[in-house]
Image 1 (cartoon, rainbow, N blue to C red):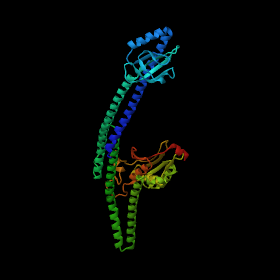
Image 2 (image 1 turned 180 degrees about the vertical axis):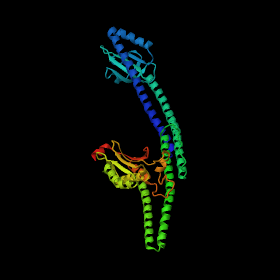
Image 3 (image 1 turned 30 degrees about the vertical axis):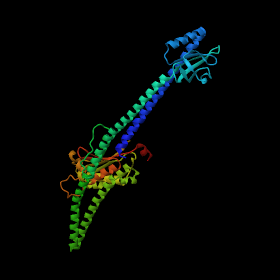
Image 4 (image 1 turned 90 degrees about the vertical axis):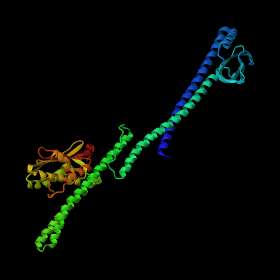
Length: 455
């Protein structure tokens, strides 16, 4: 069964059931009100006749019966009967014997009034007088039943109309839903045909379809960005690997053709260095891909970030001195526990320190800070070098993004990209700021204070 037809039938059935519940309640209340009204009238009429008999005797009852037959409506039943239930006065021709079984209170029975050919249902009050005679009063329930039957017919017609209108509304709703889903399907078909420029139209009403369309469009934007990054990565990787591979081939060929043993050994050393450079580039690209795929979270453990930073500062201090800078590290007074990948975070911080030494040693000062907090830990590396202009910060974050004009210098432009990927693995972020002067790079990582205290 098509989805459109199912939606239409479902809407029609729901409308039918809801209207059936309303109509059933109306019918129940109407019937209850009609019965209550008749019962109240008959009981009041019987009470009045009983009061008339107590105050005026049989003469007053005879006058009351005459007045009722003269002025009351044709549905009123009243009669005075002998002890053996034969009519003395009134308009009731026949009464079943069951009506006299309990001469107290209210009951329903089939009676026939004078001038009528068939018995009709009536609500009666039968009272036995002290002299043995019977005083009967009541009303034919035909009027209330007629009104109820009319109401039932009206409600039945209303129920049929409600079902038809429900089906019509269901068809309109199904058409609207089908149209919105069709828009999404058409966009999906075009995307399957490799047209990533298509987007789901959004009406601006803020309904569920708009939210779904917005999520799909955001996903498509992300896919387009990833595809563009993949293209740039492929182009950059091919460009950056071309020179090392060419140098590696040239060095290997020269070593193979060299006659002098010392020259050959020197050329072979160059081959090894070029191979190591290629391995570092490929390893960095692999680590970035693993970090973005969140595959390293299985190796998370608790460790002290302050201790890690102290080890790295001690390791890079001689290298900073060679570059003419002083590396300063202010260790926190207490341990700074973090649940993360210690080796990858060490790699990320090492990349930041190496960049600071390479580009900021001329400023004479490189600082490393670990700032603990209730919600996050911040690992900062600052230098006093030339820094990076604000407009070129996105380029510095990009893989193989190198701000120097020549690519012959050492490095592949993957340091900040790897640090950012490792920060994302820890659900954190890499921050680049102006150090005035110089560059301040920071890894901002989330931490839960309760888990930190437990660790």
